[in-house]
Image (cartoon, rainbow, N blue to C red; front, side):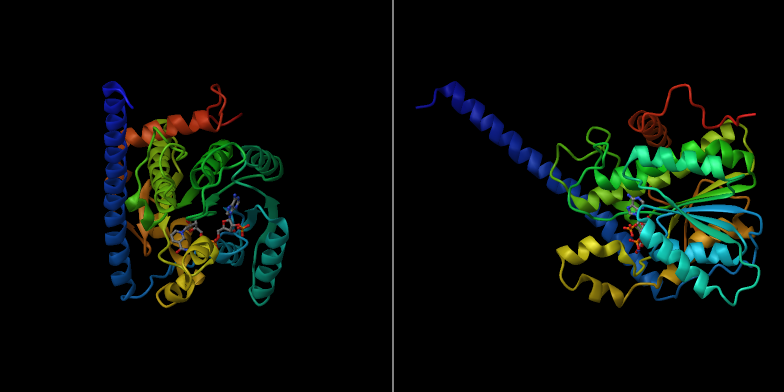
Amino acid sequence: MQSTEQQVTVQTTLIFAVLNSLHQFLYVFLRYTQLSVGLCKEFVSMGFGSSKCLSTARLDGKVAIITGCNTGIGKVTAKDFFQRGARVIMACRNLKAADEALEEIKKQSENCENCGEIRTTELDLSSLESVRKCARNILKDERQINLLINNAGVMNCPYTKTKDGFELQFGTNHLGHFLFTLLLLPEIIRSTPARIVNLSSVAHLGGTIDFDDLNAERKIYWRVGAYSQSKLANVLFTKELDRRLRKANIQGVNTYSVHPGLVKTELGRHMNAAIPGFSTFTSLITKTPEQGAQTTIYCAVDEKCQNESGLYYAECKSKEPSRAALDEVTAKRLWEVSCKLVQLEEMYNPFEVPK
Ligand SMILES: NC(=O)c1ccc[n+]([C@@H]2O[C@H](COP(=O)([O-])OP(=O)(O)OC[C@H]3O[C@@H](n4cnc5c(N)ncnc54)[C@H](OP(=O)(O)O)[C@@H]3O)[C@@H](O)[C@H]2O)c1
């Protein structure tokens, strides 16, 4: 027999459990609704076709780094920059796949006059050690950095942690790129004019930054929510980086965040495993990687946006992101928290260019 006191404790625990589940359900419902509205708008706008970057600007003598470009949108971007004359650094986690992609790009560019140079380097964004090593090597080997395209990404994967214990999507899509960018920033500042493009997504509409549980350790893991959080972090980082560059009085380094559209790439690999027939359904409504790369290329090379910075783009024009993405307090806090998580030395000032 339980005492009255024990019964009250059990009842209270049950009430809290029910309230907690209800709260989580409402949270997920609200986020799903925002995301669904965004996706519906996306489908409607796709009926009007896909925009193209029309700029013929050349990149001769410029150095461009692209993360995760052995496939998908990144590979198309690498080919475009190479054909515009840039020296392209393909920063990928699988060097064999990257070398194969490089050969394919060279083969497809055989008839192109005035191509640039292209090489691969190893970068695993889910390991802070790998990010630091890759940045060190680039700083040693390259004379300048004019374009940094933070393209790599993982989406809706089962709950996994990075080598440093971060939830995989937040750790790879945001923290890895955050550290990589800040380590390269002094060199980017030295190489002005320079542009930094962060691949985000319409999925940021369903995101919030859960500072109490960034790694989803205390709530039921919702893969879509974790992806949305990481993509919201990309937009917030783009804006905050721009604000800090202006505050440091640095001219000529512009930042852009991009939604490429719904693109048929390997990104949906975990969705395919979870929902049979997902890729067949989406292939009917998605863009090709060539179409999907257009907004990235626009932000990287087009003259029309050369005086813009800190904004969010889709279909080769700037667009209003979610309200959460415009929250300066959250952006500042995310920056500070990210600095601690990636263990940036307190003395390190990414806005200071070494003499
Ligand atoms: N496709 C879409 O509909 C869509 C929509 C909105 C936003 N986006 C964004 O667009 C970007 C490009 O995606 P995509 O569609 O081209 O996808 P994808 O074909 O899957 O390419 C993603 C790339 O990221 C790399 N990558 C993943 N984890 C990495 C890590 N830990 N370190 C280094 N590289 C890593 C992958 O390398 P491996 O080949 O070794 O896995 C691959 O090269 C992503 O940021 C994505 O979030 C895509």
